[in-house]
Length: 115
Length: 115
Image (tube, rainbow over all chains, first blue to last red; front, side, top):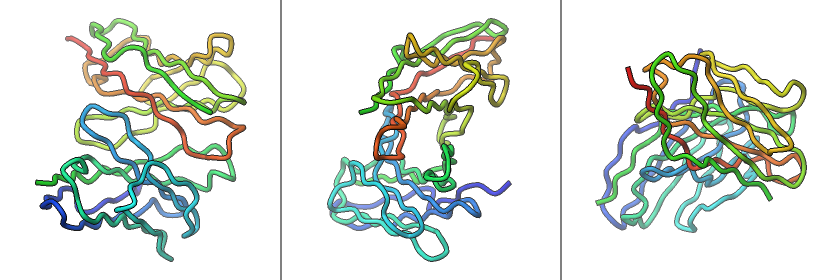
């Protein structure tokens, strides 16, 4: 079965650079979530989109922005990168949470290293 | 408000023995509860969920979880542990009375199954 696809899988950037992470949800999933997971930490919710509109916002820094496109893929844009942004970034997708208690399906993650 | 606690950072069990990974929660309304497993450098994988109905929920890979409303717990169990079960386990809760559809994850419990 198709899974959530994230690209790139690994990314190395310098401080103050920008990065763009991409997420392709499972077909028919209309909701996308972004999480940040630091070493030994639980996933911290950043932001989510339903039908191309932002649906929930968590602890996403102002330096980050995201959007969901017409084909339901999503991109997380990160600017002015800081050392503390080094983490695993997960994308998850689900069916519409308004239509039921739907579990999230996570992608393999993008490991971002800021030097 | 919703919160979840996993009181054990690590659980050690011998292969073939039963295992329990603990989770307690706090919600204002009724809880929707989830268990996910994470293998090294991988995304979280859904194991099982409780919405309503039977307190014993069966999930993937022989895992089950018991919902206990009076103790506000949702412990993950397996009758006979395998070495391949060694991974990081996350409990998550979503409050059905809240305005957000985003679950809150626990800090994770590292399960180590010894041969």
